[in-house]
Length: 244
Image 1 (cartoon, rainbow, N blue to C red):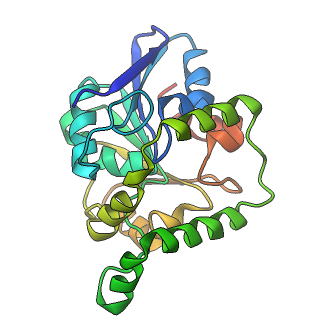
Image 2 (cartoon, rainbow, N blue to C red):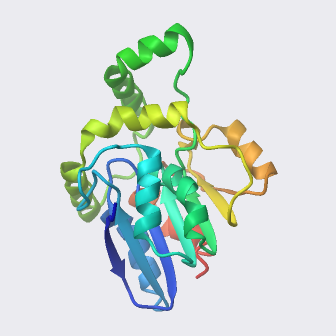
Image 3 (tube, helix red, strand yellow):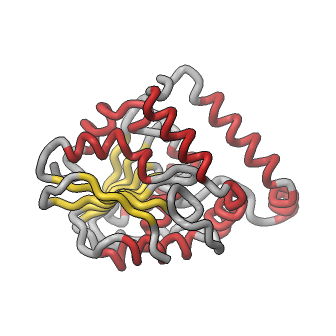
């Protein structure tokens, strides 16, 4: 399925961005503006199906998201980046897109959720409750971090209003039961990790991926929202990965 896309800037370097669950392409503003301001870079964002201006079309699966992204972004981008769910999607689409390199911000490669035995049966039978509790625990952990700017808060609210929230449980289940393979990267790739990264990519998997040739970069004292929390810090820590 063709996704809604937007392109910013007109420089010769071309970067693609894939957002996370409940977001949209506009939420990359903190990085997009800084990349385009360099003058030699253009950035294309996508809205995953069920998000932003893209159609609400089932199935809401990682495989379907990845097929959409592979169809909607151009092949041979200089760099492509995915955040959270977007990282899981990118991992499955990147070989088809064949960019020069890839960046994965806290990618949703594996979730610490039960998948076997009675605990799994109980959890998934009451998944909306369990996931809400987990989200509240994560929110408490983030207490004290900088609030969103007025512009980013408005963009976040707009993204949530367009998001088909009925997909949430199925997406979490898909990642929990079908984690990304622990394998060498298809293209030069770097994991960029926040303090919250173990919630979506456990440290043991990070170590295994690093041994297989993945780059690993940690940004200390920053949360899963990265540039929404501190765009300058995020850009400074990853500017070289974007090749600018």
